[in-house]
Image (tube, rainbow, N blue to C red; front, top):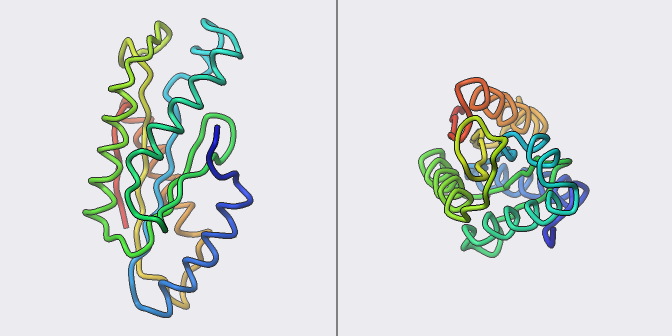
Length: 161
């Protein structure tokens, strides 16, 4: 996909957690996946599915303006973004921009129940790192918000702290 892999993300998450904890700044994590991707693969084949993931990765990366922001493939059709020094309103705005950017690609998706094009669902979590929590707990909260976005109808952003 031309973006970081999960191992690179895990390393960067730990480093940014420590940095934000030292500086008392917030750290945001966005978990997202491509809506109805299994149906996309079934309709268009795995090669086209790979091209879809590359296009989504490019659209996501295009929304990141700061050099220390990171987008990575987390697994399958799931992606994750790390936004150091970013508060919840800023992270929510970034997630909404990513949602719009992927929709604007206009990639036909006849297997989607939410749109005729490829869309994504996102979960956003943000906190100032402290001794009572872990980077994995922040990631788990973002994943729980992603699950809620999917349950609430997909092609949307769900937010929490």
